[in-house]
Amino acid sequence: MLFLVIVSGVISLMVSLLDVWYFIRGTLVVLKSRIQPVVKDLLKEHSYLGKVLPHDLDFLLHMNNSRYLREADFARFALYTHSGLFQAMHSLGCSMVR
Image (cartoon, rainbow, N blue to C red; front, side, top):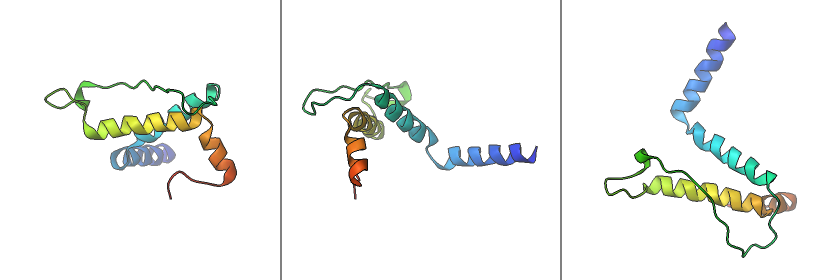
């Protein structure tokens, strides 16, 4: 019983202090892109489908800037994983941003 209280407290603390859904969705995007076959042509057009909810829009029905950048991050994760750049950089010991 004490274990469940501690685990639920840690989870609620993480959800309230961190954007846990961002990390969960980022992980799912990378895993989904790993399942797909690797694309060798980096200059080929890539597309990423995201969903925009009504609370992501402003009064003029434009996407919020923070939501736009978040969707661009997910598209970048999908592109790097789908093209094999993550695996190549990991094997070379490199990182995306330093």
